[in-house]
Image (tube, rainbow, N blue to C red; front, side, top):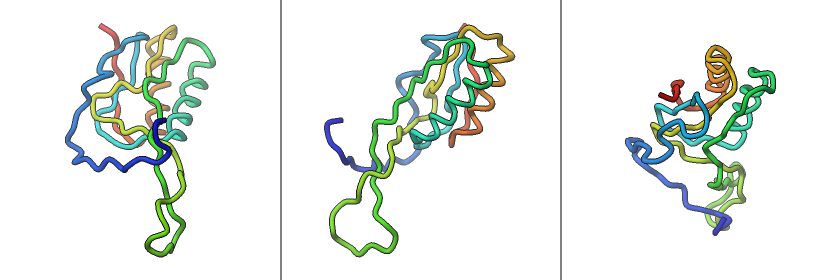
Length: 131
């Protein structure tokens, strides 16, 4: 990363994705319909759920990477004293972003794996099949 601590990126919430829109690597994809900050822990939880659902078969691609640090001060900290320490990393996911892709499994297995992964994420999602 260029800087250890970044600004927060306050956006209105009405922006849609302009890249990572289609299934590029696999046959099935999990696409975000709403926008949210997705943390590294949430991505890892979704990855584990998918991997378990396909019983370590097939291939999974993670199209998002949490490279945005979020800082935090302790509770009841006085004003001043600088910016807090890095607390976690996240990626701002916009509506329309393809987050995960999968190949080498049946449509039923992929649908179930994506359903389990979607429960771990803070965005509404839909399952896309490559046309």
